[in-house]
Length: 309
Length: 296
Image (spheres, helix red, strand yellow):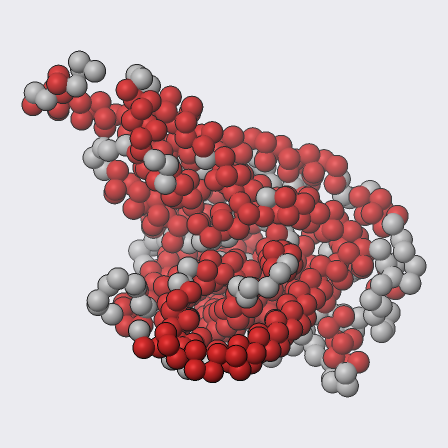
């Protein structure tokens, strides 16, 4: 207790802050070191490799922007994989957000036994990507798959889900919606935070359920929607395992995702420099999209307590 | 304010109508919930059912829902299939989990405490960098890390899958734990400080025990992440004796025949422990997903 006045003199404060600084960095030391060793260092290395011809067995040979020039001028697979990924991203964003949001609305209804239903809907999250990819490969099987059996049972023509370039990418989207319950979980959490009296007030004003959904739920939920759109879009650029296991990018490169392209360049052909350039192009695209989404978000995302829109 | 008096005009009729509407609504909600659950659970039900079917039954038209003949021996056959070693692969997976988890829990909570409770120059900058690192696509660092591990002689060992986790245990885990620590009343540490406790003691003796729910979330997300990881083992592990379960499962996908029956059996075995964990710890898990926002 007597020690407290001793803190007052000015000279001691400096020593104190040094001690605090060291203590602080001892605590966050692991992640500071981790970021330097596993993130920033590799980023710099990757930026350098992207300017080289590097096939691992020989030291990297500096070629300037050669890789980038080749990417944008002659590499048709690069364009194809980028287009596949963007089309998937857009389809998944629209379908995934709509389905997740509707499910979340359903899962926040006040009825008994909801906990059990939520467990059912969330369950696909824990299925390993390998297992879900192989499972859906079977479900989509043209001749013996359960989905086509259902279609034929109700008198529809079977679909060559993964085997035809028209439907293969959309088949991936459907599968991703099934595995994407994290989005639903986040919407459920967002919906639970909307104050009840807003709905009640709208009800008293005579708004029906659909009107309330668009006039209250959507605006109040807009930060959550925004979060899910951003993470969902970034996530779709990470799409790899199902394309690798189910279709290997086919048929005729219709599911040749950007990541699959990087993987093949780097680990099948050991073109490390070229693959690094591809990774950096991806990084810049993601950054640009994120910035645009944040800019646009000011127009439609409503944050409670802020007057600016 | 005027609206408050309105319902009393025709209170009885209004109530009656509202209740009927509510019941109708409830019925519709249950119907949708049941149909939706069926759709979402159907792939998993098919997975389990298929794991008991014979190879020929799987490859006949029209497909059956439940097996005509139940073959529990599929499980033993799958486990002992040629060129596979699922006992070894299970052991490898558990070994990686056991070696990773303490690192994730200790270092992420240590860092989270530093970010939540200590004042020092550079704290905000570093926390910003930790959060920004989530946005970085892993492909950017994948190749240099592969080359780094190649030069360290770590390829085809478990080190690339274990060691990085000991450096902060992942940005999202730090974020999740920091959120939790910020909610712990500061009076607790102030009382402990007056008793002469250092920050390290406060972290270890007060924050670690108090953050059990958050640590359970972190544990589950970590275990799930390792259990399900495919890309990491695919790139770093080359010889079959070092495979993990996720990588080994793909061994049934042959060039000429795909043993769907065995794939489904091992998939069922792989999913089962995670389902049990998920059901037991669902509250913490869902909270973890909500706070960290992203799939681990």
